[in-house]
Image (cartoon, rainbow, N blue to C red):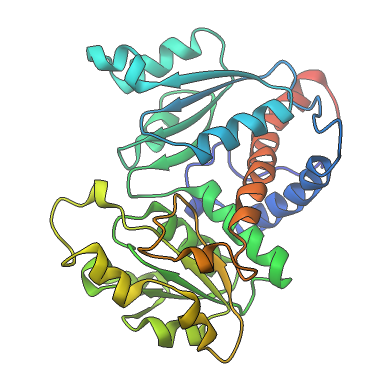
Length: 317
């Protein structure tokens, strides 16, 4: 694993090259083999490296996934929650991070409600920064694990037809997926109510459809997003029931297609709204594979970013 990424931080997919993404996938596959071991699923790669997980927004999968990845790499882990910190007393983001760095932290994994918070930080501190989600902007490790999961299932991303269905307007997952999939040669169609699809998004090299059945018939993979009610300040559709009737995916709908497609979801799932249990738990679904791949992808990103510094310091290579 002697190659390096072209970036010091993972701020978003936009900053990665195609070669960077391929390197992350190759490293992910190697770490996935380690995770499959019945015992000794831990490697000493980042021993002595201290990583702080700063979460200014709630998270279950991403936070646990990063923490597991860090511990599998033998890093020292510090967890920070904004709700139980001096942020509540009015401390700025920069002061919070500088105080943590003064305690000799090497890497920052951060989720923040403000788009661009990670870019701001990267201009002020030297530690590696990994974006675990910034508002409605990007969620790069989710896009990487989604793309890796598709490649693992279908053998390649080039030429594959991927539909992203649901609340595109408020989804950082959608934006990162668009950047990642189009960069790797996949065709992308966005599908959802007109009120939940941003204007001019076709300029990112994607198509837009408002017809669910047509979109499902076209695609090889459907990545279904949840309705993010917590980010919606006005009503974008009459009711959840009406949304489910028009854009909810159920087994009957999939059985009516003349081919079998792959179903994905970044979680958390609103069962009975954007996707029914008979689809989420079916053989066509790779939702749990995505969760498993998330740990391996994050191990790869942590290794490739922090690992360069470790290798340089100990004089290996």
